[in-house]
Image (cartoon, rainbow, N blue to C red; front, side, top):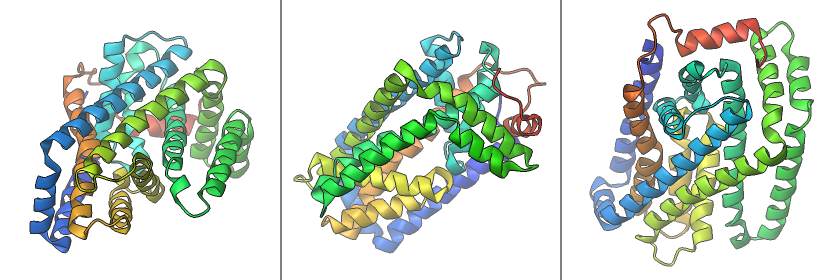
Amino acid sequence: MSLSPRQLRLLMISVGAGAAGYLVFALWSGWREVLAAMGHIGWQALGLALLLSLANYWLRAERWRLYIVSNGHAISHVDNLRIYIAGFALTTTPGKAGELIRGLFLKPYGVTFHHAAAMFFSERVADLIAVLIITAAGLSQLHQGEMYYAILVVALLVGLLVLRTTWPERLLRHVAGERKGVHWLANVAASSRALWRGRLLWQVQGLSVLAWLAEGVGAWLVLRTLMPDMPLEIGLFIYGFAMIVGALSFMPGGLGGTEATMTGLLVLQGLSLPEAVAATVIIRLATLWFAVLLGLFAVMRLPTMPARAESLDTQLATQAGDGQGLK
């Protein structure tokens, strides 16, 4: 199955915007100094970061397989990994919504698109919680960090309790009115409740924390080449906080927000601007753009779907119009 023209256009726009943004970034901070800092970081640190990113992708794919199995479907580890990685081809869409394309690839396995949407929603929440947890490691280094840490723990616990209730669904239905798309989101929220209970909750969240911890350590290893005395918790805080800001910006792949935040935090830690830009670019290449590249390769390697198969955009419109629940 190939990406629709609209999906390809979004992908090309995001890739082009990212490349142009990094070029402007480097020119603005002094491209010679940035290149020199990249040379200082070296291939070894980049290679380790790439390996830890692969660990991140594998752990998240295993989490995705747990979701599929919990709904009574069978899929091999290899097929699941291939389909999950293929979703990264559209990870640079706003809110990573393009990753919903996995729902189409899962149709031959009996997984409804609605269940795939519920999995996607649950995955995004699990990612947010995991990144908040690894970010919290650096809060102890801040003024009144213990207080912020306690507030974060309480907020996470309250959030988990809310996800296990009908409140999100009821709130969406209350504001939906005649908007079928919001009713569809309410159905997705209702469907995802089962994914936040019992043993599955702890398995999923444990894999999520390990996955993002691996990628955070990869970022820290890159930063250590420029600042050898940087504590691990500070590296995790910088990486995690930048990821959260990028996610909240709802820009494709967090472009702009993540880079600006990470660069600013690194300058505050004592790096020169060119060094901070170089470290940021290397880290984003080893995480975001590495995932996109693997996703494009995986999409091309997936078996071709029938010509009559609907595109992701058509499927989304149909599901939103029908407002159908999880089968």
